[in-house]
Image 1 (tube, rainbow, N blue to C red):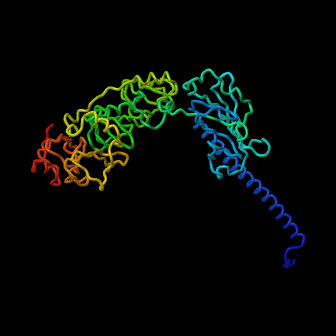
Image 2: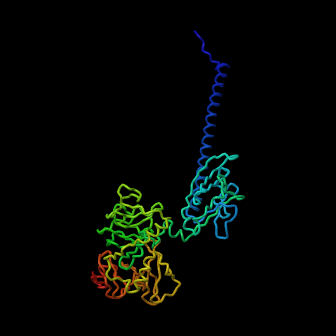
Image 3: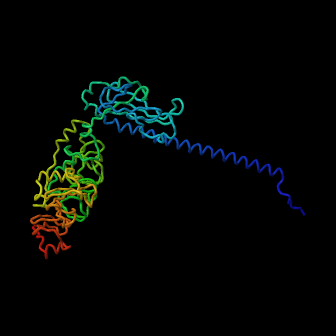
Length: 462
């Protein structure tokens, strides 16, 4: 019988195992080192890309709508020029570092190269790069700027401003810098932003049509609105344009095809009518369909042929033509006579209504004495960006928002917090009727129905 070897592994076997283990560790280690190196390189490249793109985006925002741009080693003249350049591998604007040190996490060399088009003094090539060592690009991005507002600035059209720069002119602290001026008056007229700028021919002009017949204050769910009523909702004015009453469709609900946003910029949730002009991606568009549309498509979507492109917002001829556009004033049918006419002139009240902040009035202060006839504003309970207007109907009134206070809410719709005087007329959403005060009302029974039918505080007049 063969005996079993119980003495363990032989020396040869041990050596073989160790050799195999060593080879495995070497191969595995090499793979891990290469993988870690790859991920490290990939991460650094990604960070370089983000930082480079961010620098280019920043410069773009600064100069795209500039009215004058120069590349020079000295300040062009005594005007208020902004200046961009590179100092110690960081971007500077007006002698201040644009991004903090953490932005340049990989400690690369920042280089910005510019080139001018001599045949056209309004175009500028720019390349932003991060470099490692001597002029070895790690990542770079380029862009050509067509400086569209140059022709607006006086005297710009006849001069090639970039004839002094070569293909490799760099922006740095010791040689060339990028100087530019932004004319705020030009920007106010032509630039696309998120502000409602009335008087420019877009649907934002409809805000000027707000008066005591169509103003409905802050939007209220389940209220039935008449066509062309105007409400404030979520930071903007909206006009109800459906022929059918609907108390459930909110402004911005495109599927309901009920509400037009009175903003110069196109809104995907807004409904538009024939002749409406809006701005989208720096172009003016005019609705040319005779139907009310809210399709969920942007104006540049051509399949439905709803919109006509009128031209860029930086083209002065286009801007002047758009400004000729007007919007018909359609008063709502809701109120024939209303409370506001008792206390303010139409002209004064209409301009007040058009201002959601009521900037011409002081906010209520408990430390101030108010006389009869005083007006104050208070922040709306329903929208913190909107202010309500209140009128003192007695000497030394109490705190606004309490029916016994002597403060009347200057508003078309009935407000249970407001004092009312005899013959005041307001609209009740609950009753879907206009109510006329039979007496001075400084108290309520707690129920509008009871105030009408039993207390006889109010009569329904239409």
